[in-house]
Length: 293
Length: 293
Image (cartoon, rainbow over all chains, first blue to last red; front, side, top):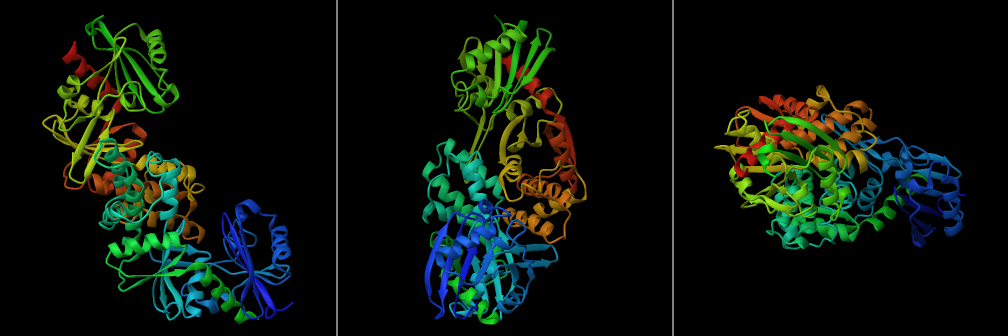
């Protein structure tokens, strides 16, 4: 059963999975997404979960990326240290058995910095391989854990994770701000004011309490709390991620998030090029398959 | 029923309450603490909850402070704007009926800053009234929401809240770090390393992810994650709270927290004077009673 006649690509995350049937011509002929992330599948459930994917999409080889290769996934795929490109990922695939392979994540250990990623590397390197983005530059990949990725010569030279999405969820779901920041967030004046505060180097744990106090004292509108808090976190995120860089930033991921980050980058005086992460993922998987087929 | 023959002081917070019987000589003759904070008492439960306090301590006038005066408490006691001293608090007590009075909180509105406190003001101004701390200087009151309080002429001139304790709880209870930072935190090398990172102006949401990555990559010991993360949050807290100040800092509150903050202040090159918050609370209530009896 060779790769050249078609394969299945799976982006398997913590809380959901997306699977694509890529036919022999390289086109995606079928796909689905569901909530069967690694946490709901559980350690022993992967063979059945993969069989289900094949029943829906076809009996083809599988190439998977994301948290499925973590220590809570199916089979652990050790991190590849940076600098890492498609070649390094393809050389370190992990055989999960049954015609299914897992792409490793990427790690960084550099002085005071330690960092890891799983899944974003396929998208970013895929966009390079397809020519959608330049082989050198800065990529921002927002999500639960935003990744700032420095590309050099088509490889990931360094990166930095900022847990902006997770922090917003923690504040929204469990904090003293939860009754204030449940609203949807869109770019606008309150968002931009938050971005500026975040960019200024203000201490997040101090600024966040001000959001509550400002509403309680009648100074700020309740509906501005969510966009301000979001802008604050994203502004702080930018101050970490943009450090030492210049020029436009590629923003890759889900459109509702890339839009917010592009707006924040504009507030920081930086251009943004939004790239769809799903298409980039398929390009990355195809580039790896080229090297192993 | 006059105050001079004795009264009951209640420090009534979100999740617990402490009640003290102060006799005619000013001594505390009986006290108790339980988990009947305002959230478990509920809006209509306060008359019964107060009757229970009197049944246990005596049928005396009550003076209460803390979240019992918030919009989720018994009767809302509007904030007194700073600068605020014992005189301003005593002049703005709110009559909850049935011989029970509530001390107002203190608010700040100053340009970009908005802030509120409820409960800490009684302790800090009480320590000034009893002569335990100087009428001018900086006070740090750690807790769920740490308060940095600037005293001038025995009054609260300004203050700043940092939600350090709440953030640590959010990370511990609900975040991707929860399996790493459940341990108890004590001062030491890992704590001090965190304090230095926090003081350096590092972005918290970026540094926190490094805690996880460092352990997963085998660079850092799992048992250092909790003290490092705590130090990181407290270091950031200090960088906000110490801004523009010099000299020793009074650290008031529960001993397990004042010890951590005193250690962090030493790492920041600042002296700390630890003061017990319970004793200061009783001094503050006594000073208010003096003005209304």
